[in-house]
Length: 273
Image (cartoon, rainbow, N blue to C red; front, top):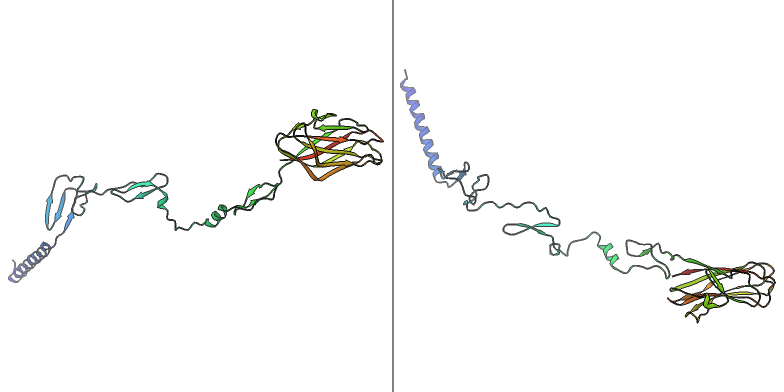
């Protein structure tokens, strides 16, 4: 049987709990707040409201209430195109990277090298070509162009007081039958030899001739084999002879009035350009 004292304690606890609940409700009633309990349930200012399915413009895909609930979140996929950036806008969109996107004040690590390459780098010496370019744009590994060797000769033993014209593969006493039209070319380093001794003071002279076909003239490229008791040779490594495109060239071999032995003449020279 409940005693009077215990009944009084129980009544006091009920009254205290009721007052506490009233105080909490009174406090919460003055606070404006809202919670989303799901897609269709909203708890706001102490009231629970259940609505129909939300519209696409009110809630996001996951049903979270945003702000006043008047617009949806706009999503933008990552830019996947080459050289694209995300540009501001409504909504933001991917766009191609353009020159205006790169400020002119940025520092480029290779600026020094780029400036050097923009300048006119050092060249090779005259008559040479570059086989490479260094980091500053200067020519390197300068090399002389390849040369071709031109060979010709009398093709036979020649006797005294003869003038013979020769060019590679042909020899004749008439220049018109020998001279050949040439591209633009330069001849140098003429070297000749005779097959037998011509005798003392019996000099044989070889001269390169160039010019308009049919009107060739002697050049400064000349080689003289001095006569002696043995086979001799000569060279001219100082002078040169040149043709422009379409001009002709030939070699003239002149023997003296006296020869100890008839001999064949063979020659070579370098052709460049």
